Image (cartoon, rainbow, N blue to C red; front, side, top):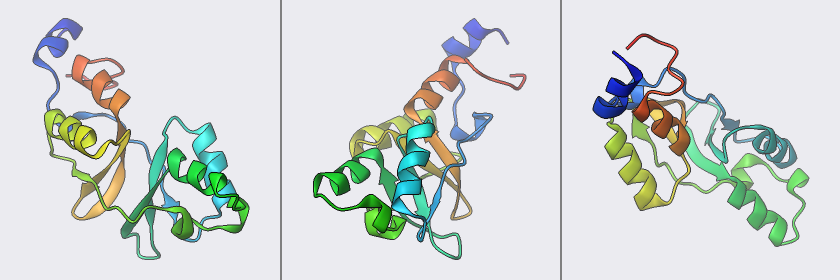
Length: 141
């Protein structure tokens, strides 16, 4: 299938994206380390997990900015103290249209992806756009 064919037909589901982002933070992760990770990552946020790997919240650059805005020392906080306790995620079998709609409705730049109730990675708007038109695919379609 040619790149043009992929762009016209499009890939259809999240699980067709060859690589998901593996960034996630543990609830006890230090706030300064989280900030530095976000600054060096291609993602603007990531899910927070507890000791059992359960998805308990999300930290975005906005969340860190809000902490700084209040004058608090981010290095003295943990992920659990910074995170928003949202559990918004999408199943890996969801379509790109479903993912885009959820991202639009919830104003998300990054969307955690789940399989069997566990977070397996994250997808960004750019990831979906690239996959939808067939750019950056490392597998034969």
